Structures are given as structure tokens and as C-alpha cells.
Image 1 (cartoon, rainbow, N blue to C red):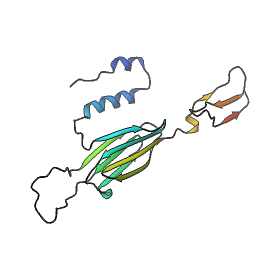
Image 2: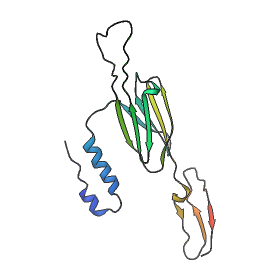
Image 3: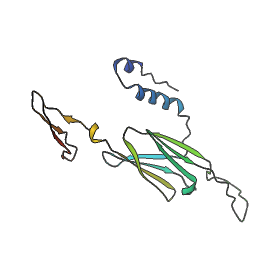
Image 4: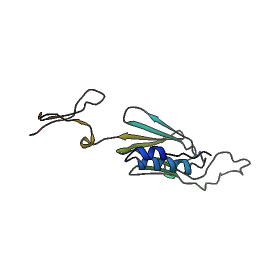
Length: 162
């Protein structure tokens, strides 16, 4: 297994320690357990969807916890006994799992749905107005205007004294 070395980047950047630590810890903790399989899709500039294949789990068997910058999806193993006969082969996984997803700042869970054995979790990134980039006037002009978003709209204009 190859080890990622971000030392050259750490020397020439400031404030990216959390990102490098995250990348290194993901490489260390990726133990190869790929259960349950999942997809991550982007459906817009600020909309994401995580889809996990959780066949055999009911909604009450799944626990989704969203913390700051972390989404944890846990599936609890059921001890159901198949009625009416003995199992000759067990090929359907019914084991507990835990999947962790690191979230960027200002990403929140919008909804979760379980249908046809697929758990879909919709995420949206909402950057507060105070954190959005703003154009700053130079040489005494006093108008500050929000930078237009991808649709070309501006959200706010602020006039102040110099």
C-alpha cells in the first residue's frame, strides 16, 4: 500500500492542515470494507445525492446522524428467523454497517428516503450571505455589491460611508 506524503504541500500552504489530515486519515482507515456499496452524485452546483444499496433493511433499521462536517449512516442487524423452513444457503447480507462521509462546510442533509432497497440522502450546500464573496470598491467609492452567482443574479447591495 502506498502512503500519501503531503509534506511538500504543507510547507508551501497555510490553513490547509485540516484537508491534509483528512486525506491522510482516509487513506489509513480505508480498510477495504465496501459494504454497503454507494454512489455519490452531483445534481447541481450545490446539490448532492448519496445512494447506498441497503437491500433487506427497513427504515427502522437505519440510523442517519448528521454532525458538523460528518454524516454517519448505520444499519442495525436484524435477528429475524425465516418462518416456514430452514435456510440452506445464506447469500443475502444481513450484517450491520457504518458508513462515514466527511462533509464540507455549510453542507446539510435535506432529506433521506428508502425505496426499492436504495437509501438516498439528499444534501445541499448553503453558504451564508456573510460568507459569499463581495466586490470591494477601490479609491473612495462606497458601494459594495455581491458577486453574481451562476444565474447572474446579485443578492445584495450595501451602501456605506468611506
